[in-house]
Amino acid sequence: MSGNTIGKIFRVTTFGESHGKALGAVVDGCPPGLSLSEEYIEKELEKRRPGKFLGETSRREKDKVEILSGVFQGYTIGTPIALVIYNVDVDSSPYEKIKNVFRPGHGDFTYFVKYGGYRDYRGGGRSSGRETVARVAAGAIAKKVLEEYGIEVIAYTICLGGITVEKKDLSVIYQNHLFCPDMEAYEKMCKRIEETKKEGDSLGGIVEVLVKGIPAGLGEPVFDRLNADLAKAIFSIPAIKGFEMGAGFKVANMKGSENNDPISTKGFLKNDAGGTLGGISSGQELIMRIAVKPIPSIRKIQNTVNEKKEEVEISIEGRHDISAIPRIIPVIEAMVRIVIVDHLLRQLANLAFQHRLKFPDFFSIK
Image (tube, rainbow, N blue to C red; front, side, top):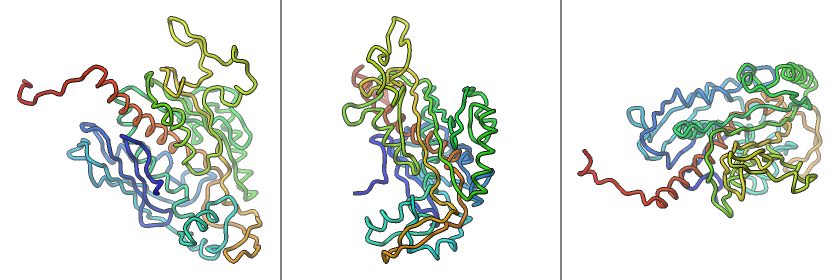
C-alpha cells in the first residue's frame, strides 16, 4: 500500500526525491473558481527555499513551480492540479562514498530493509526534507481556499537549541529569519546557531502553531478526529518527534477542575483543550506545539554499520542545515492547512445536506 496521499476530499499526493529530476504534487478536490498563479505558490516556497541564511544548507534551489493542469486563465477549474518543481542545484558526489553506509538518525537503514536494498541514497532520496517542497506548494493551494473563509494558520519558533522565548509578539515573526516572536530570544538563537555550526553539530527546537478563524464543527469522529488528523499530518514531516495541543502534556499533572474549559453565554473562558472537543473544532483558536529533532547530518564522527554489517565511523559531508527550523515552519503550516481544508470541505458537504441545499436549474437562472 502506498502512503503518498493525504486527505479524503481535498487530496494531496506528492512525488519525487531529493536529488532526482524534480519533485511535485497532485492536488485533487480543489474547488473551482479560485484565483491561482505560480507566483502565489512561489511566495510560500520562498519561505522554505534553501541557502539564504546562516546555518542553512548552501544548496541553491530556485524552487520555481510549474502548474501543469487544473488551472485555466488564472482560475482553478475543479480538476486535478499538477505541480512540478525541478531540482537545479544537485551535487550527489558526497553521497557516493557513503552510499552503502547507514547514517545515524536517517531513514537509510529502514528504507534498505523495507525495499530490499532498492533505495535512492542521494541526499536521502524520498526520506529527505527536500520532499517537503511539494507539500508547501500544495499547502499554498489550501491557503487559497482558507482565505475565502478567513482562516489563518501561523507557525513560529518558541524554542531553538534550548533557548526559549519569554514573550510572544506575533507582529515581529516576519521580521526575522527564524519566525521568532521574541527578538531578544532571536539574537540568542542566532548566536547558538553560530556556535553549533563551528562544532559540526546540529540543533532541535519547538514550533508553535496558531489557527485563527476556524469555525466549530470540523472533524469526523471517531478515527478522523480533527486533532488526530492534524497529529498524523504533522508526524508525516521528517524531523518531527513530538506533538501536543492546548495544555498538552501539562494535563498529566492537572485536576479535572483545572483542565476543563468553563463555558459562558459569551463563549469559552480559557482554551486548555487547544481548540477541539471530542475531536471536533470548538470554534476556539487551534493551538499546537511541535518538537523538531536536530538535523542528523553532522560533521562529528559517529558510529554505525554498512550494508555488509561491518562497523564503521562516519562524518557526514555535504550541504546541510544546522536546524530544520526555520525552513520546517512553512512545511508545518502547509500540512495544517491541507488538513483543515479537507475537513472544511467535508463539513460543508454535511451542512449542505442538513439544510437540504437545492441544486440550481441552469435554465431557470436569470
